[in-house]
Length: 613
Image 1 (spheres, one colour):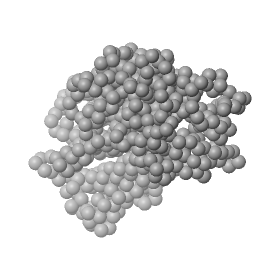
Image 2 (spheres, rainbow, N blue to C red):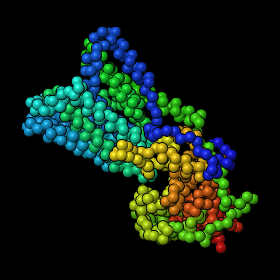
Image 3 (cartoon, rainbow, N blue to C red):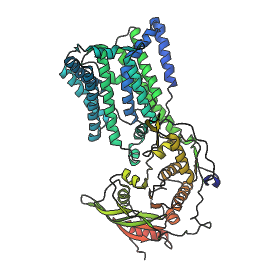
């Protein structure tokens, strides 16, 4: 972390120029090299067979790629979130057979479309529910569903189904201005999906889940609901593919989905979507789809058997995964050499005495938060027997205790992560009870966790606003993220703490520990915030970084916000505490001032070897 002059912390310091417009979440994944590979394949196949370089051939490649174009958006969203669905090929076969049966029996294109999309959403919802409920790797769960759906497709019909109504055939083969409906629909789906991923609140949360699901959840993102929704949306897109394939082909065999999931996954991963989650951009995905389409068509043109397509696609998938792992290794190796993009100065703080003497305490201030009689047990094990203390407005209360004293349990109760068996809490005189961290945040109680709950694959601004993303109406109708307003608010909060940004879009993974701590603390600030709980904010920090965090905490308290500080660092306690609360064996054994107490006295209180009057 680099230091700047104290003037950088003053409110009248001009802000650096903001980057224009919204920024796409996640890491940029340039696929310029892959685009060159696709172009090289075109040249190669044209040399081997001059007929390949023909406009009609490329039109055919586009039409044949429509199924992958539609399906890859759903698959990419799942991969970005850190999940996968291997059952989409068998799902396509099962839905296709059922749609075909419905179309033949009713001769209704409307009913066939509703059946396809509705059944797809239902199967996707089932996959998502099983993945979340069973808490097993999605690879295993969806692999099982691949076998199940594939078998059911043959149960419904072991032979191809045909005899569709003309309206369904027109949907699959009709044209508008010379362009097939299927192509127009695929482009519309791809553009809409890309818009959701890059410009909406939901898109940012998908990237956040892929970067760190726990951090996203602690920031108020409904991870479980979002993941299940992604599986349902992915299934609905497969249902749409089944309907369009039925209309374009005129018949549906139970083998229709063979190798489909391989093509879709390869296109997504070739396009820069990280299999481990958190990265990928639509433009790269489009290049990946084009590469797969050109490769499949080219192998046919040069007269190779169909199994060579499997060999080629599988080899490209392995190369893409290998390149992904190499990129991760290079990125991790280069972490320390990146420019942080932010600077921290010591905030001007009226509470801190110029000569370094103990600042006045605020124990007589108005009570902002109080917890009384908190009790929590897990079966026969009592984690917290009696937790009671108060925090005044602008007061810093340090919560101390040895390992197993009950500090973590008490903090989780206060932050809404767990619910107490007994006890009560009040916030500004009003009784409160939180069923989740999201409820606590909404009430004005923020928690900065020891692991900081930051998503390393997101930028500073996106991390600052995660869970409370400002929005605006595009064209007066469609809600989109307002990244410009988010950047302004982020800069204002950071500047209040003496932190200036040089680059809004620098990723959190490139920041030092102290800088990340500054981001986590600044994220918890806001006019609505009444109390902030800091869990070990100086753990694993160096001397200089610890001093900067101490200054940040002082400036927050100076603004009138109550602070609960959990720490084992006695130097930090002596520098900051207005009052200390000591826990031992699940009970509060001391609640009072720290003036006149030595470090040995504090350790003795926690160990229970000495009483302090």
